Length: 77
Image (cartoon, rainbow, N blue to C red; front, side, top):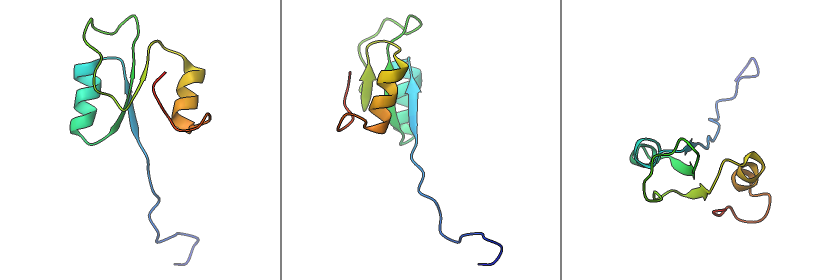
C-alpha cells in the first residue's frame, strides 16, 4: 500500500487485571480474555477465582515480571 500504511493487521494481546473474582475475572473469562487477579484491600471476601495469573497483593514490579515473563514463564506469585 502507498502512504506507509500496512495492510497486515497487528497482533494484539490483552489481559484483564482485576481485584474482584466475580465481576472482573469471571466476566473477562466469559469474554475470552486472559486474566490477572490481584488481591487488594478492596477485594471482596471470596474464594480465589480461577484466573490465569494471580498476585496475593498489589505489587507493580511483580506484576510487570508476570506480564513480561522477565523471570521465565509467567506464573502466579
